[in-house]
Image (cartoon, rainbow, N blue to C red; front, side):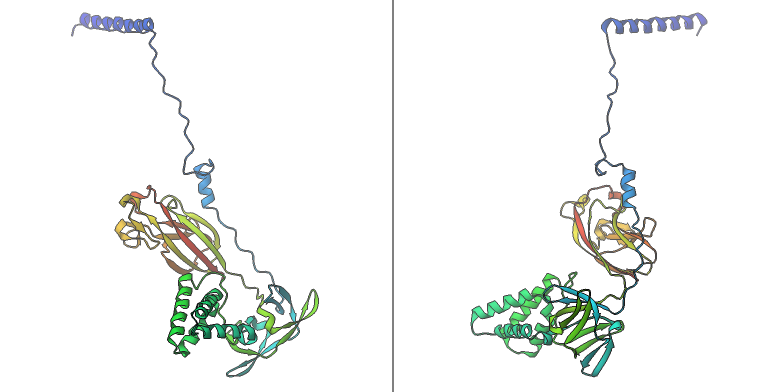
Length: 373
């Protein structure tokens, strides 16, 4: 291309661009600017908090448990049948128990608790025996009323019913006792805080073993802040001595489908120390949405929906770790372990990595019990 031809083309391009600018001015053409967009609050955050603030809350470590305070080994708490509690020192230093192997003398300072049996409550014992007798009554209404009352008394009378069932051959009574016991099982015999089962004899729990027999002393003098008191054994529901041991930690926690291990863990706010015995149980279901609304998983997880950890932890399984840096392990429906490190217990649901950003409706109801070392 010659120099003159190149120069001509450059001049032509300049004149053409100049005419375009003048045309824009003549017709008042305005090119719109991009709109200013205010980013909405992240729906995954709570109360408008930033994601890093939320993460900091999730990973917050619970403080170490304070050491147990020293206690007086002679002080006993007497929980009476009327609901009152008397705290003080017994007038006796030892309790004499009559067992099938002979009399046994137990120092008060070695006793963890003692609970009078039905023999110490003759009226209650007679009531229960009469009700069990009425289960085989010729009167239908008496049988029904007796069964309802025994059901109302609940799991504490289970051993008494089982003993009656084994020693009695009445078909009607046996059938009704079976129905009552099955009802106790369905209602959950291991509920937290459940009243211990009743037996005929007294039960004495020591720091080394448990004794079943008859407490010889039927009255106790108690030196309390209200002065010297006298308490009948038959008025005591349970007597307990503070051994200074740390109490179990119990907590119920809901772990829903937002606590996916790849995204965030649920902070239980439970501090675990090295050597603590931890028991976790879980139930419930979550919907595995990528596979359809009818696809469900339990805390055990299901390999049908892939793996969180290949061939070890199935997708949908409940998992845990101690502190943010601890190794992740499977909990499933039940797991008991001894803590090998200290930190806050964290829970989550393991999911196949390909679907970890999906929504998973539902939740697992989790119960945690920590028995301190």
